[in-house]
Image 1 (cartoon, one colour):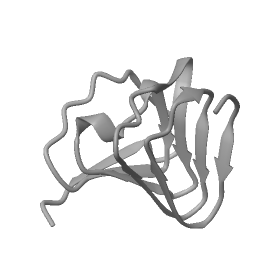
Image 2 (cartoon, one colour):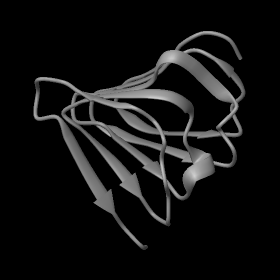
Image 3 (tube, helix red, strand yellow):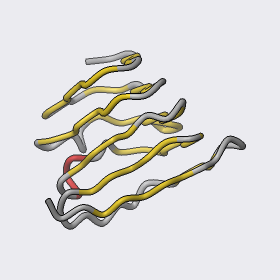
Image 4 (cartoon, one colour):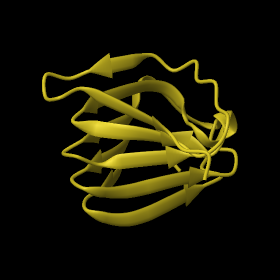
Length: 102
């Protein structure tokens, strides 16, 4: 897929995404990433989390390849993950990271 994915409030899931663009999680709600999404890339921001939204991953391959921009959002891990993504924090409440071994 080439292009942006805009997600508002609610519960969403993405698995095994390949292509180029930016995923925007705007508003409350949870986006769960699973499978191998490392093939979805962007030279700039690949994931934008703001408005109180949560992005949940289980391991390192669940995350996209590129920068993460966060303003008032949560990045949650439900397993062991090591991320090499550059993270840019916005002016609003910034970053909240939750490690949840559920």
